[in-house]
Image 1 (tube, rainbow over the protein chains, first blue to last red):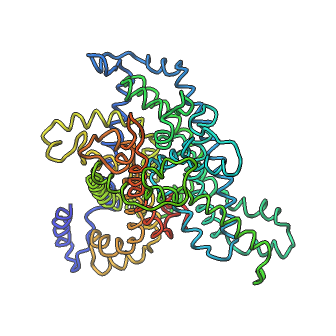
Image 2: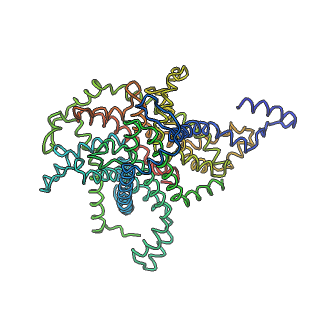
Image 3: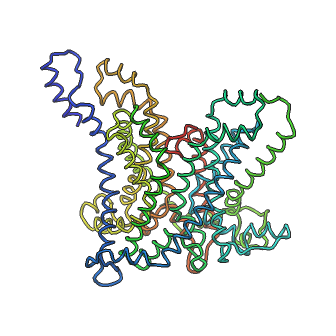
Length: 319
Length: 285
């Protein structure tokens, strides 16, 4: 690419007879396209090809345990199956339960911790650094550690409960408690994420309106309601969207904590798709469900991110 | 401003902060403590808080489970995919920041590829790599099932959208005037990019590289499905201590420490940039 540009620029500069070669061979448009081409090729081949493959399989009969493997086209049969599959809908329901509960708790706790971090005087930097740790840890590895900590006999949580004279719990083993236990783990890992980003948002707020409000003797509650939260809204939306997208894709924590059990108490969509596609090898049905799921995630994100995306697009346009 | 005196409120706030920190750091402490416990100390009821530390668990993890190989694989896969991500990503990201091809639409399209749930595309990836692995090209480039090339490709694709978005905000912070004056000095476009733009974007490139490394290091699902033993990575290695007979908690915690602690140190070292990285560059920490 560079050689080509050099050669053709020599030709053009000789023609123009300008001493320092100003390489105006490529227009800005073509140059910009050239720069994104390698990345786009990569993304097109390896993101769109699997997608196309999944669409194709979702329209066929494909049971890898049968001798034919991937065979005839069956139209929308697999989608019809997916829409009528009660296990699929139950797993969707679990994903939503998990997502709503986990993200709500993380937002509330995270915002509270951000305000607290913003107010403290001593060792603020150290506290902020330490809060990063949970989210840097591999979810599968710390998930397994939590499985040990939740252990009904040898787990430290039951040990603490017992020493306080409280009843011990079967954290991951009981149908009622398993999902809350997975949620607690997710809250542990991702509340710091919310806290740190909201803190950054708080620290970036302009000082003047707050000083003016204080001079007017506005109450703390009034300042929060009319100044702080409205000004924080873009950051809060962004954190919420990022957490929500991640929450519906939950897989690692379920794998290491419960493997979907007990029974199907924690079998979220991703885990059901894994079981159907890679344990029962029903590629057709699991592909159809994956695509429905993907479609829902993209639509949901696009709706939530409309405003944020507009800002980004504007920022890009201004550049 | 607030008075310099320490009020009761300050004391309470710091105490609450301390309690919250202890709650959030406790699992990490417990992981590290357990990894140094001898087998009998791990399975006690109630759990012991004091014990004589031993390195047995680490010895087991490295001798019986070949953790050295897993770490090597992880470093290879994470390193090569990060290099590819930085090269392709910085070219594209710079282009979007300066020339904005596609008027924001291509940028959004790139982001949507990142929303794809891994599970939705993992079976196609599995089948594609199974095919490619049997071809001569696949064998030569180590692309195939249980080959590091497959994971390098997957992690590059998964990290590219993130890298393009994150670096975008860094490239935008570079004043255009600097590039103009470089061009007036007779630099070509590519020279300007390499000699002027890239050095100024170095912090952004470093953050992107470290996030990309962290992602590849911590990734589980693709590594779990696409590797067996030769190309196994560290997260899959940790989960390998779960067997039909039961869970080897001691070696598992030791392996988890080996997997988790390097990333914790990474995060502490770059905490200044973490917020910006975590929000795709949208919030400047």
